[in-house]
Image (cartoon, rainbow, N blue to C red):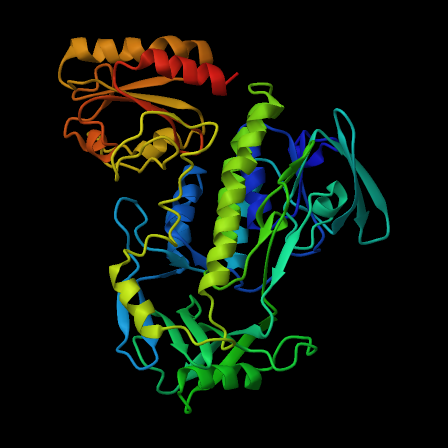
Amino acid sequence: MSAAADTDPEVLVVGAGPVGLCTAIELARRGVRVRVVDRRAEPRQGTRACTVWQRTLEVFDLMGLPVGDYLGSGVTYTHRTHHFAGAEPLVRPAAQPGTPYPNPLLIGQSQTEALLTRHLAGLGVRVERGLTAVAVEQGPARVTVRLAAADGGVHTVRAGWVVGAQGPHSTVRDEIGAGWDKTPYPGTQLLQIDARWTGSLPGDPAHCHLFLTEAGSLGTAPLPDGRHRFYAGVADPDPSRTGDPDVAEVLDAVRRVSGVSDLRFHDGRFNWRVRLYNAVAGTYRVGRCLLAGDSAHTVMPVTAQGMNTGVQDAFNLGWKLAAVVQGRASARLLDSYEAERRPIALALAARNQRTYWGGVGPVPPFELLRSRLTEDAGAGHTGLTLAYPDSPLSGGTSVAAGVPGPGARVPDATPYGTGDRLFRLLGRGDWTVLAFPEDPADPASADLAAKEAGAGARRAGVPVHVVTATGREGLADPQGTLRAALGAEAGALLLVRPDGYVAFRGAAYDGAALDRHMAAILA
């Protein structure tokens, strides 16, 4: 019987957008019985969140998705050109080193959801549509959720756990009283359209562009179907005006910000008006109910981070919840989900509020902004630098900048001698110990590293992979590629979490400290 056919699942995921789908995939691939319901009778159409950053592509890879096919369906995000009023344009490459996916991808959200839905179906779980969560009641061992069907019927589901991934208007969040701290950004609005265009808009049309002028801000991005996304942050003269804007209103805003009077739109679609606000839930967990994605945090859609942040929520939560459901960890492990992910949302909301320009208030110092960009490597948006050094799961020895220490993302390394990739090992979704001997060519050194790593790992049921020059004792790394990527030239012990972040780092002889850390966090 498929998980979708089980009326009383171990986990009920409410919402089948990218975040709900990713959560369900992470649970289902670990053997958790999961159901996914969504209020919409059909998947929502439109490009919506169309920028997929580098770390999100890595996450999809680690989840086992066919990322190569996905890349082939989108547009490679190669450059960002900044246009500041009164200054020369600044062209910056979007590529980042140290990842198998150096460039972001531009692709419609409906295509992302289709990819995830197919993969979830391959795991035996199909989205159940036309079901709206209307009530949530928690008990000591189960959560009772009432689902209203489109035909007027009401279904009752009793799940061990519930994940609310419905978006900003979340029944689960409201029912469990998680709070919703909402900060509006009055006086401005975001007007958006996907359209083909003609005119003298400056710059390479294959690039993404950002214009900042006194009238407001304007972003553009090429899309797979030949259209471009245009999104303009401008003053909002009539806040009572509701409904999506017509083409003429969006075109007028784009012309005013860009100063290009001969611009024309053709074949426009998905016109959209957004009154901007940031909101973060007061807590991400109440009892057996958890929140992820826009149900946990809704941020102004001006830096293309909302969906990407939600996917990282799902990737963070899925393995933790699976471990608790299957009795491999206590519910205390779930405390680390909010501890790690809520500060990320708060920081993103603060950054968006601080940096957004929508033609209202004091005009930003454009020259200063431009000069700061010339000194910035541009990695902040990518998700690659995200880390959890202060997490209750992180421990061990701090390291120099550029070396993955406690809480840091583990980079892929390919090849590490055999043509394999580290992500293929980590993508199994288990805890992993990587043991680097002080001398990778010395069997005695390898034996010592294996012994140091082994005792605690065996008790915790965590596999140990000893990395040597020959691979006789574990992983072959004859060129030292993996040692260099992880900064382990002098030897190291790394405990890697199921989501690919370092939980512990120590020297090759720090087995006792590794043992203590595993005992503390895997109990």
